[in-house]
Image (cartoon, one colour):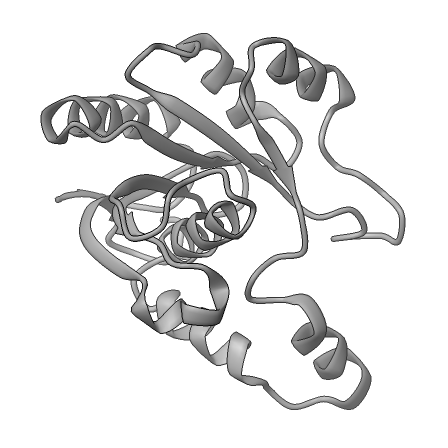
Length: 188
């Protein structure tokens, strides 16, 4: 496992790590988060190869403001043209729980799971979340290792090999190996 000194943009290093791991372990699916399209641009540079199937997961519409899609339409179109699936859906660890928290206060089960995963890193939380979201959308197989990435803020700084399940079976999801993550949760 590679540990970065601080969270943030380690996109190029993470890409190198995950491409090597995918080749070495014969893993074909790689799941990437992308808020506005910056990480997705890097995915486009990778291109779709016979042995690699990238999937991009965005924030859901209205993540920061009702009705607003943060993801760049031009990048979405380029990904479509490159046959790279883009998943825009309600986040696994948000959904109704977040609505209850905002309306009534308190903390709810999905947020407890998210906070627990953040003990590793924000990016590991994201990696687990989007792997299961991609499985729910039928974009990755269940119970087969995939590489999933995540980050702190923008870009990526974490990656793991995960056997995702569909969300009703979330607790059968397995993190098989953390490939990289920041060793600190705060920037120095």
